Image (tube, rainbow, N blue to C red):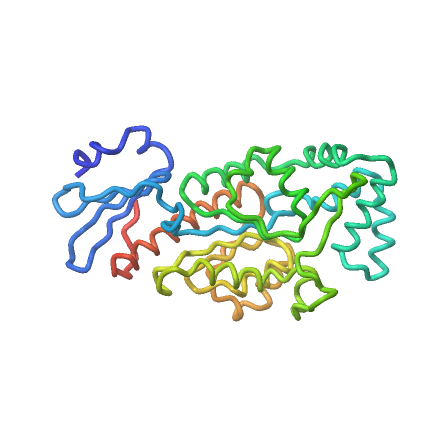
Length: 320
């Protein structure tokens, strides 16, 4: 069997990012399926190579959509707090927070404070570039992207902060979409941060999420727009996060999806207290190494699940 496969699979392919399993089709015939980075190969019966699919997971062929929170998930710290602390405004921030001002509105005010100190947008960008991103998380993102997953970010930070950090770490091209609070530089050179949902015009009605962004509503729309096939053959979603609002996003997931809450963070505590509300599989993580291991294993399970339903066989495959 392997002799036939090696005609189209290089030794390097077999050594890097490869997993395989035996799948039994409807006629009881064995199929060897290999998932190798962005290609899928399979063999049937006596070993005759019957197919190869390039661009696995790209465009309409996407099988797995991975949605990340940003702060304390991709980035180990909170980018808002990082900037406020680095510019010496922590006390001012805490005092204003006690007034009940929404976090998003408060961050816009903090940008005004930074501007009044004579700091430029370049100074803010330099500050953001110093925020550390765990190397294993960067590796996990690149591996998931190479495997053909559609990667997206859903965050209550803001576009300038996220793009600056991703570009600095060479990860911007890995993501197809970023759902976050919009930001822009005004005529005086000050960074403005606006709400994703304009809560002055309408209220989203979710008590778990902040007024400017309901992650559950965004996830529901995202999943609905990605449903191009039947329920069983539709995309598999993996959601990775740490905060209370990430629990709301997790409520939108289905039984075939995966929720990856960060252990001992608010999302984990809510999951533990409300297990019956979560339909998705739950696989926790604690740090960069854990996120990488859990994410890549979750992607493999999602790909196997998709291929099982695609071929009409719902039994657990034999893994190697």
